[in-house]
Amino acid sequence: MSTAVVAQHWAFGVYMLAGITICLVMIGLAALLGGKAYGRAKNKPFESGVDSVGTARLRFSAKFYLVAMFFVIFDVEALYLFAWSVSVRESGWVGFVEAAIFIILLLVGLIYLWRIGALDWAPVRSRRAAVTDHSQPPSA
Image: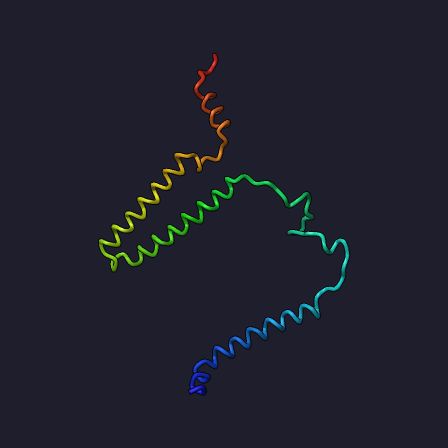
């Protein structure tokens, strides 16, 4: 019984052994052949041929993160709709109704975000100034 199990899974064992061996060889070669010079310039960050200036501790507006979250959310929702479109014939009318409810919920969420101003990039002050500037008649 045990030889039959080993005979069935020998390829997986060889694959795992080869993977571990390759990793160990790469780490060992990097340790043996890698540079050993130390100095102040070696520890300095370097990106694309440009020396870094300033600090990496920059403050970003939360709107950048909101846009990233919206992208991920709507991207995952598009993935679900793609999976539904692939199996639309098998799912029938029940699947169509479920997809319609899903799309309606997405639209309700998008309208909610639009109404609370989460999709507006400009601050409220800038929008008010733009509205008041356009409401005044041009002077002649």
